[in-house]
Image (cartoon, rainbow over all chains, first blue to last red; front, side, top):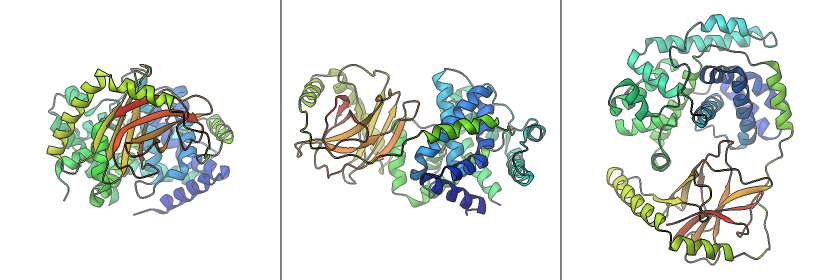
Length: 190
Length: 237
């Protein structure tokens, strides 16, 4: 079920598809922090993360008219596009993921330290609340499922490589990823 | 009811972990299964939510200026232009001759047919014809291009990795070579991302009765109605 934020995102993207730069700027304000945060987490380098995020927003601008709301929310579309771009970068450079451990370390402290004064306190609070909710759900996932999803999501490893890395059969890894994602979705939707 | 195996594939699809052939086969299954599409959407939302869990970092203000400056320079997408220029048949003849004598492609075809037979045996919904394209000139050796074509639905999916950009003012254009048509049939413009990757669902401009080959040429930006530029990738069906 679409939230009011989903609807607002779709409106901004539709306006951007029509060439509205102001709407695109608003969409940037809405999405840039989570996308940049993901880029920093996966690339571990601020300059590279900025290049990746810039690349993603240019793609969002170019592809705005092709966005299909039946396939995903705007947020998910942008987030998964960012992840895909980052993985392409990691693979192109032959690098391994720098950090795949816990994604929750010091999250609140860093969020507070980096929050921009240009944004409203309410916006920041909303985003932090969403992030907190996801982290709470993640904490409740079985460790093996969480570990498999973290490797699958944050690294450029294929599921075959993840199975080798964790010393588990391929079928087990596939099932852990699937079960973990389904539980995540189910619990966040509650 | 979605089988666990298909659910596994859905999760890997959402995470981009399937290879090109697996992706093409899964997308055909997806196009016929509303329940599976709903699951994929849910898994996408879950995966994106997972991305929220990372420590928050505020991008520098300058990044917004850079992004807005770059999109201000972007040109609006243009629709394909028509042309009255006569088709240049010579490159097609050269490419066809090359393909006819290309042992590598013959070997590749046998391998693909074997894989397709296995895929069909294990997944009755996977009825796509798989065609691997290669460079007739021996260039672009790193590029991997696969077309999954479903004749009864007149639709296909092309998956491309490691393809270099077509050059300024140029676009890659996909063509279906039909035994019953004098000229190749346009199947659309291919836009690569900055890493030379594309995965596009296509439908040729006209019905394809007897597919002989798929080819990619470099054309003027926006595309043409008949091929004019050099063929850079081709594969027999």
